[in-house]
Image (cartoon, rainbow, N blue to C red):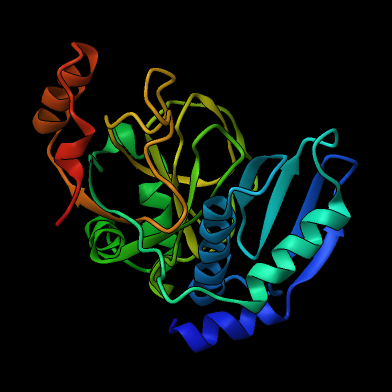
Length: 249
């Protein structure tokens, strides 16, 4: 999305109160990369402006949730300040980091892979090929701490969510549903189709920040063997893993 398109999206911004300590800034009604770029760009500009009273800025698919301290500012004051930022866009546009994430798609890590293959008319190997062929945009984090909503899946492997969600799935599970893919950052419930697993820690409270990914990042999955998975898992367990090794040029 070029600067003119970003500016057009931002000029249509709508402000909505979210309780008495947050303000939502809506930039559109759709879910796509161009609108996400506008959301992420505005988040960066608000952060750089260092507006008084802002506690946290949370990008979503099509909006920003701006948490603020009501003792230091008000929703009306923030709306005016953000409107000013929208009226005077900056020339620089933020670009995210690129990541290569190893994932093992063997059967014990991929309980839904055969079903996904059957329902899409592909072989399991072809499902993996489709999943690893794309570069995915990180739209937002949510649901679980650091959980990345990434898109867009190839049309050939898009399916609705599972009819029967699971109560517990392991951290690192690679999942797909609708047009999105994700990695479960901690053990939790899951309604998506599980097609693989990565040993990479996507959320670690010892990290700064604790979430590996940020909105605007780009992720590519690389199929890896069980032996390679086990070696990397051992590095993670022993404290020898460096996330920077997964960064792409």
